[in-house]
Amino acid sequence: MDLGAAFIKSVKANAPKAAICIDPFHCVQLASNALETVRRAFWQKTRELPDKSFAKRYKGNPWALLKNPRKLNDAQHATLKRMRADKGELWEAYLLKESLREVFAGDLDHEDVMGMISHWCDAATASALAPFMEAAATIRGHMEGIYQAVTRMASMRA
Image (cartoon, rainbow, N blue to C red; front, side, top):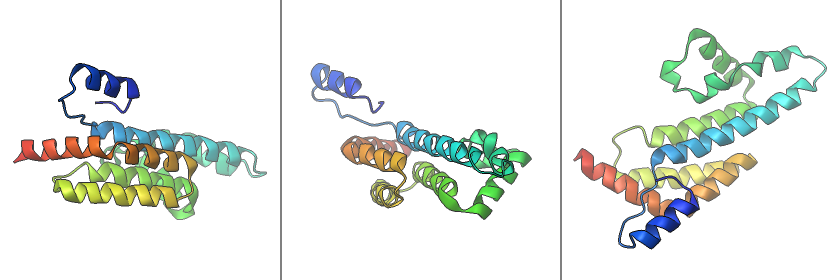
């Protein structure tokens, strides 16, 4: 299910014995939303620089940041290459989003997934990027529901 409190409250009230399973998609969506917040703030800051060319390089980049890296076109790959070379907070935000997406992308053991999510939350908190710190706090608050989802997904694969 979604991370929304109303959904969880409804399930607890109407199906008290049901396991609350948080959909991994919604966890990754938190990271994608955090990345978009960082990107917008970054772009606004670069627009204030005397050299406007820097802002123009990053104006059209949301899809390069949000799409699955295997589905990027050449221009989007070039945008990511520039970001990697520049390093900085936008690249760090991208790596955080992608690392969380990758946690849920494979056939990892559920215990490994949970450990990696905990490690991701630590990294997001240490990043000092406020949107990622908030995403990590939200994910930490839903670890039991994520665990329930991940263990059920693993049993379905077996």
